[in-house]
Structures are given as structure tokens and as C-alpha cells.
Length: 219
Image 1 (cartoon, rainbow, N blue to C red):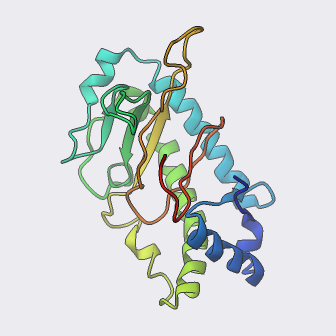
Image 2 (cartoon, rainbow, N blue to C red):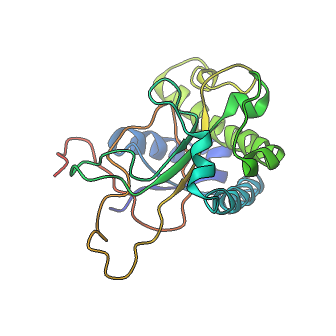
């Protein structure tokens, strides 16, 4: 699939052509690729994302018994750790994805702090910086969508404020490599789903994300 590629600096500058491309991508695909390299703010966010990848490595290097102490309580509370194999995927097999959801309100102090796994507690300032820079980037996109949808400015951004509770989260993912000769090397890492919330900013370093375009069946 050749997803639309948008340039963050052009969105920041209010380029009307890129604004139309953004709106079209959201209507047709629900996804688009965002080039952050040509913007100072974008490069800062990329640096923050690298820090989150380092945190991801440190976090999922912990043994499973340690991580299980911070297990999430779905569906009541999705914050915390979900071990690989806890969910079923579309083909009925178990998933191949560890994930840990970090609550934005916890990190920014909008609610009493919870106790997270040690690497997360040790990197609270870095996570806070990532959240603030990511929110700023998302506000650029949401402001454009406000205008395209005929909404008042900040209508969408106000759904996920930094200074009030919103249930926004940072989610760290880890799908371990399959061993050579693994009979289930082609199994689905995580079942099909629609993300919770207004907009998801996804950073990843390998291919594998599958997208179901509008109007097509999941076969």
C-alpha cells in the first residue's frame, strides 16, 4: 500500500495543499506517513522517540515475573503490562506482543502517581518531554482537521488536554523475534483493532503494520 506521505513543516506552515492531502488521507485510509525530518520540532520529537525505543528495550528486558507485578486490569484499567499470549488474534491463535501502557495523566501529575515498572519510574522526565512534544505535533494536525471539518479551533485538541485528565497514553510494544524454524513464524502479532482516542502517533522501526482500507473485508 502506498500511503500518503505528509511533510510536517508544510503542515506547520499551513500549506493548503498539504492540509487537503491530510484530510483526504484521514477520510480514505485513516492512516498517513509523517516526515518529521525537515522541522526543528519534528527532529526534537524524533530524538524523544529514540529515547522511548531505548526505554522499550530496557523495560522488556525485565523478567516476566517482574513485569507481571504491573499487569493491567482489562477492561477496567488498560494501564500497565500485558504479557504476550494474553489475547486472541483474528485467526484464533494467541498474540505475539508484549505491551505496556503508560498513562499520560500519571506522568503529568493530573492524578495521584501510580507505581510503574522501575525503568518507567526512572525515566519519568524523559517520558514527560516526549508526551509534551508529541502533543504539540498532534495539535498541528488536529487544528488542520478542525478547519477541514468546519469545527471551532481547538475542538479536537481539547479532547486530550495536557492539564486535565484524558486517558491519553504512551504505549510501548515489543514483538520478540521468532526462533529459526518456528512453526508459527507467520502468526499475527496483535489482532485487528481500532485504536482508542482521537489520533495515534506511531513510531516503529520494522515493517509489518497491516491496514484495512475503508470498504474492504478482513480476509
